Image 1 (cartoon, rainbow, N blue to C red):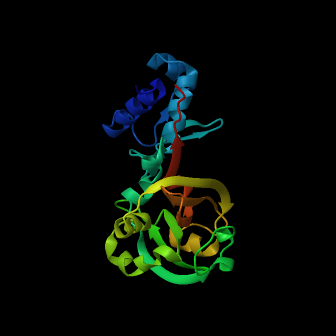
Image 2: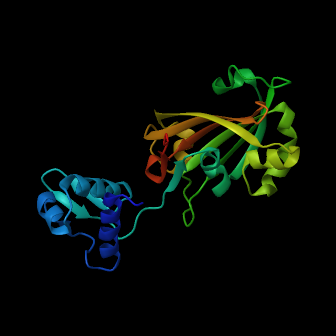
Image 3: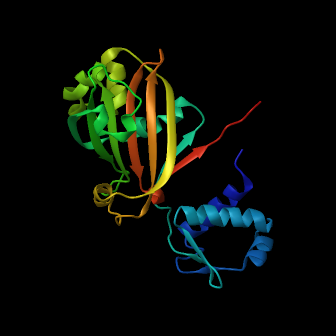
Length: 238
């Protein structure tokens, strides 16, 4: 069932799309507009927050709420309820501009505590871009242990994610995903690739994928433009 605030947000967006509400128009004060729509102020605030998140509205103190776009900005949404959704980034987007090299465990801080049979890893780096855009919203570095490093020749032509190439090549399947997210200042190289200012706030997600028998499949470090990427988790206990 769609939440009431989302219905209100969708209704406002539809009015913007058909021209009933125009870009540049300022909406009435919250109390007045909530009464006009027949909803509570708290519901309207949630609707405004959603429309501001997708770049349709802009709210400023003492200036009110203004329509700044007639369409939501492109954004990749990762809605997480299980492993299938958690892997949606790699499944639904293409890793492009792929480069590979071999590194040792000691070369990468995020590999500390993990093992590769030869102490060498295949590093796969690349970018992901939203449909219709040219500027990447993501830069990823993926580290594959030596046991699966034979996938290197297949990566440029696969058009899919690293973990899917491993699954198809070795007859295994992802059984566990562990990840942690943090807000960081964007490093220079990643900033250039995503068209951001060096030091701008971005989201970094470090993840480890395991085969169902708990064998490590890959370690990844992914950087995201927070304006074009969202993680949403919905967990229910019945």
